[in-house]
Amino acid sequence: MELVIHPDERLNVICQEVSEPDIDLMNEMARIMIGRNGAGLAATQVGSDKRVIVIHTDDPSNFKAMFNPEIVRTGKDEETMIEGCLSFPGRKKEKTRKVIVTVDYMDETGKEITEVFKRFPARVVQHEIDHLDGILCMED
Image (cartoon, rainbow, N blue to C red; front, side):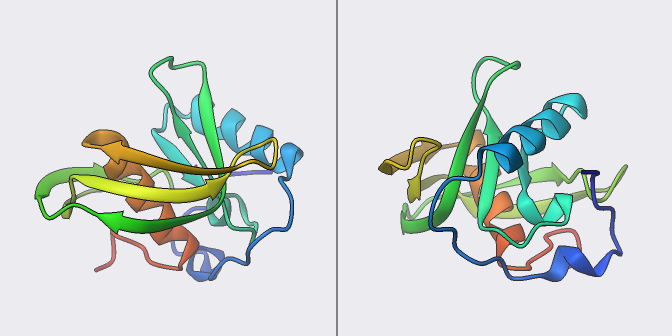
């Protein structure tokens, strides 16, 4: 599996929900994200149409996987920051996002989780979920 680079049309795919965690896909995505020093990665960025993202945790060698992530609630506050994207090497863009998001997802064990993300982790989750919906923040 390799990182998909824009303008590859696979980046515009709307991902399909999974019925169970795909551990091989999760591990491969984490390997690519960590190897490229990314903050997160969506399945479309490795050519898969499965609704899966991985994000870094506080430990740079560790990650969190989310299967079928869905933002179910957002805070009112927004923040504008510069974002990058592994699929757009060298490009940066200013983007306004919610500061707090609540996400429902399935973890790698199949357990349903509801988790609140704040600040930078919230930004990463929103960016990666956009990828799952075929939305490329570097284009809008």
